[in-house]
Length: 178
Image 1 (tube, helix red, strand yellow):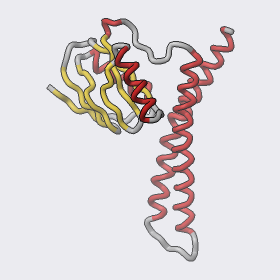
Image 2 (cartoon, rainbow, N blue to C red):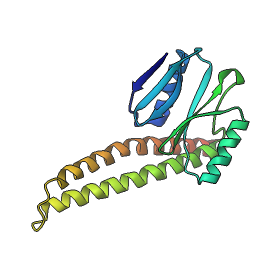
Image 3 (tube, rainbow, N blue to C red):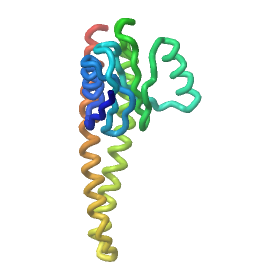
Image 4 (cartoon, rainbow, N blue to C red):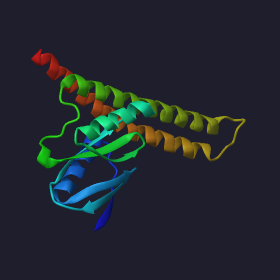
């Protein structure tokens, strides 16, 4: 049996936690896209899932996926740079980043992508709203598009703040133990 669940998370780590809770109940992720998750019924707790943002060239991604496959990790689905993967729970713990330095580097990569999206949406929002107030231009759709851009920028700011805090906490912890 298959089920489809619709959820939107501004925090990718909470999303991953939810997918693992579904797996613990016997629902295994088969496919995902923006806010849409397809699960298939299976053995409860059989797999551990991880998600990761991958910003690699085609060749680098192919090599990385091959490395993961050789490590017993199955790629489930890829959408918009985000990849879900799983490993059998019987194989033990499954962490993609096991040391502070690699986790901090990953947070920086994800933070850079979200910052770029934030800047683009904030600028587009400002530009579209400004066009509306220009006395020479009366484009009535611009303020609505501008408002949508500003709302998108606000939504994107949520994961930026969370990732920044996690990165800072990890850096602080790393300094404490050095």
